[in-house]
Amino acid sequence: MIYLIPDTNQWIYLANSKDPSTENFQEGNHFLLLDKLSNIIQQGDIVILINDIIEAEWKRNRNTAEELIKTLKKAKESKLNEFKKMKTEYPKSSAEIDIILKSIEDKFDDDIEKNELHIARVEALLNSSEKYPISRDVKADVTDWAIGKKAPFIGNKKNSSADAAILFGALEYINSKATVTWSEAKEYPKAYFISANTTDFASPTNKNEIHPDLKPLLDKVGMKYSRSLPYALREVDQHLLDEAEMLRLEREMYEWEMKMEEEANRNTAACLICTPDEENEGLNNIHFGPGFEITYDVSNIDPNQLELPFTDLDSMVAHSVQIQAGFCEWCSAYHIKCSCGEIICTEELSHEETIDCENCGMLFQKVVIYEGNNQYNSSIVLPRKNV
Ligand SMILES: [Zn+2]
Ligand SMILES: [Zn+2]
Image (cartoon, rainbow, N blue to C red):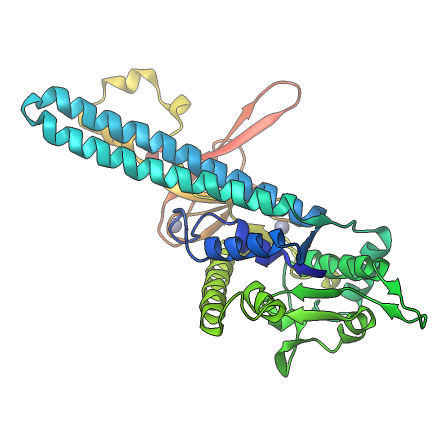
């Protein structure tokens, strides 16, 4: 029996159904990889090890995939309705419109089906995996290593703790699977820890080997390091993937990881108002969520002004802008990211106070609404002055 222990990113790659740059369903090579994995697991030679961290990660991804399916279904309905309306308007072209309707329906159904299939496949893979616990000891070990700044706690990576817990938990689990031979020597099952994060986990001189900080731990239970799932599969069975195929799969994974990292960097910024002490330096990050549209605060509009010339009212109602928002992870201050990319802290604004973007001049306003029970809800809107 051979155990494979993929880190979070390997799982995110397998579980991900969305291309981070286009937001579209991404078929890519991870279907092929899922197929190969499922096949080899069914043969009974390989067991994939998972834990709570991986399961939580998958749940997050499953929600994204389900959201994507919902969006596709809605988009399908509205597109179909559009063309159905056209049919009544242009009865003469009814036959042509029917052809378009059919092709729209097919395209959407195809994408919806692929997404549903994707969820089912990853779920099947998780269900055929073996779960190990992350014990208190393991959590304590992770903290010790982080304080000691030993690999994988090199640099400033966000996933280091999760990945260290995955590795240390797996080491403990493999250790518990040891059998004693007739000569009273301990024998461990074959196991591969898989992480493409070679900066943190691999030896600085050879990315196919584990980091010297971690080597003694892996050696103790005979665990091997592998830089990617395709690479590990080829290590396990040369016939499963030929070398060109492995390199192609690896390349796609790396490209995907780079896109993810770019995306994460683009959406992360330092807080504008707090400075944590030296020990907690760099923890005042804001992760900006997906973009959303803000418009004029309708409650601000004076009903008497509805006599405004029609064009004016039109531009006022139609005016909206895409922003992103997020909280500082250290002081919780609310920040927005202007559509021009400028970051603005709106935490210290009072009700109806405005602030302008220093870069593009766009004016934002804070509106605080009392919701009863000492609860206030504040939002950022466009003040009417922007027109
Ligand atoms: Zn802050
Ligand atoms: Zn701006």
